[in-house]
Length: 162
Image (cartoon, rainbow, N blue to C red):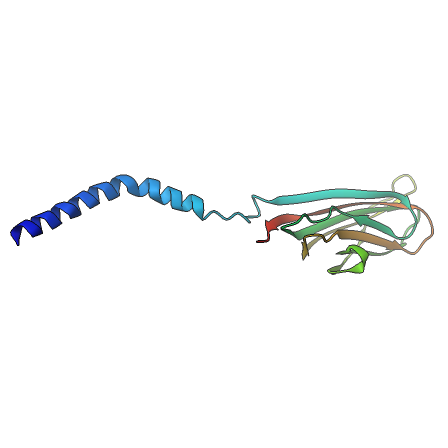
């Protein structure tokens, strides 16, 4: 009985020594296996597109969301430049062809006019998701037949869809 007790105690001491030696590398390996692969910081997304000298409407189609991904849009910005004041009717985020998400974005007149042109901006926090194969759009509608220009940016992050 005494031999078994001493053997058991020796085994516990050996396990304690080996555990202290191997614990940190083992925990580091486990931590590497459970990283957040969908973290915003790992999958930042931003795209800027424009349309120049178009008549109503200006429809900016961004890149198609790739297979196996989901795009989460958190910010939309746009700068609309017009030859006439007070003619912006609407700026919106939506899916291509009118599908999916619709978010109407408030437009604010920029201070002053630049070379006979009038500028309007929007810079809004949004929450919109687009799945694989979908195309996010930022569209502007104006109450004029005059050509105008819009520069738009969407930003957020992409995640993997299993």
